[in-house]
Length: 98
Image (cartoon, rainbow, N blue to C red; front, side, top):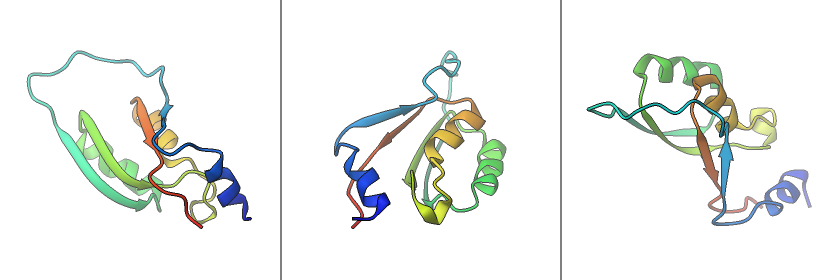
């Protein structure tokens, strides 16, 4: 069994894993800006971060974020983006990669 599979098996399907839960929460603005984006694993996280800062959304809905994968240098992409943007992030695992 690969290390990735072992790691993923330590997670629970349907469980939500909070990231950066101590981020400062603010009041809701009169209008919300939402960014919904499939970031395809989170390759080039610095470029993703730069674009997200430019768009400056109130809410991010991201799909396909890696956590503990070799292809993204073991980076927890959700945690990285949440901390860099000063947001609270949540990660849920949809399936196990074999």
